[in-house]
Length: 150
Image (cartoon, rainbow, N blue to C red; front, side):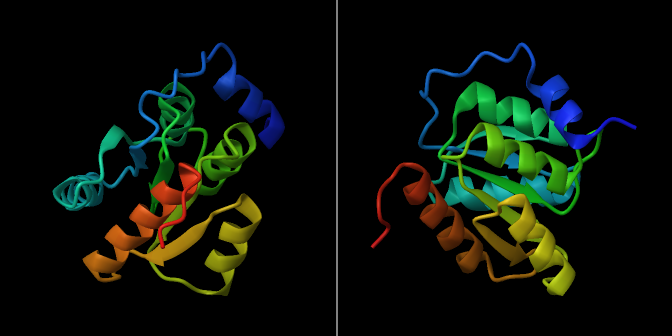
């Protein structure tokens, strides 16, 4: 099995950085289609643009490189070679100015530890109130754009 650094190199090889035109939007990633669609509708309905919606860790990494979003939201599970935490590690390494929100089934000590190790800016439970999710993403977008949300 390849090391995570070998996987990272394979996943980003040949990717051309975007031109920053999508800097105000977010990349939304989850292989749970219903969750991805619900989050997209919630965020767009509150004025948060979604520049890419993907269902795998590899696609999340590629979308971050291509779009240079203000933030990335990785939810529950990601299919493919790069899972949720591996994709987050790659994103935080190759795009350190793109904050990542991790959406998990349940926040517990293990999830918190993995999120911290992977470099998540925030971690929320999927069952949190929609208003909390929207405000968390807005805060991340402001952080990703280098502005304070206050």
